[in-house]
Image 1 (spheres, rainbow, N blue to C red):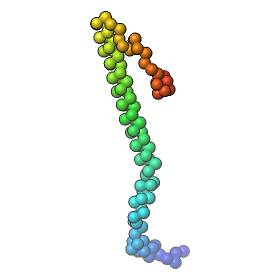
Image 2 (image 1 turned 180 degrees about the vertical axis):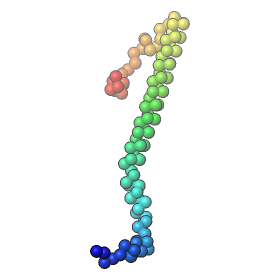
Image 3 (image 1 turned 30 degrees about the vertical axis):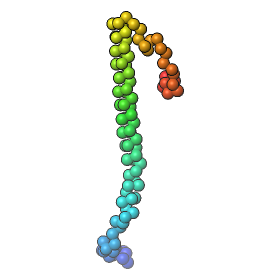
Length: 94
């Protein structure tokens, strides 16, 4: 049994009135938003972790330099004599 409206007539109507409206681009972006937001969040986290690791390495290098300098000159290193005040961030991260 065939439909009262043939497939060719439906295609002809759809061909004349395209569904590409200004909203279709917005809907496409809206559908893609969760995935792209997750990718941006992951990239931001990777950048932040890299920056933290670089700062930690630099702090360790400075501490090593000061310790070596203190041994060479026979003086106590500033970090050994002056206690560093514990900030809330330092206490939170141990």
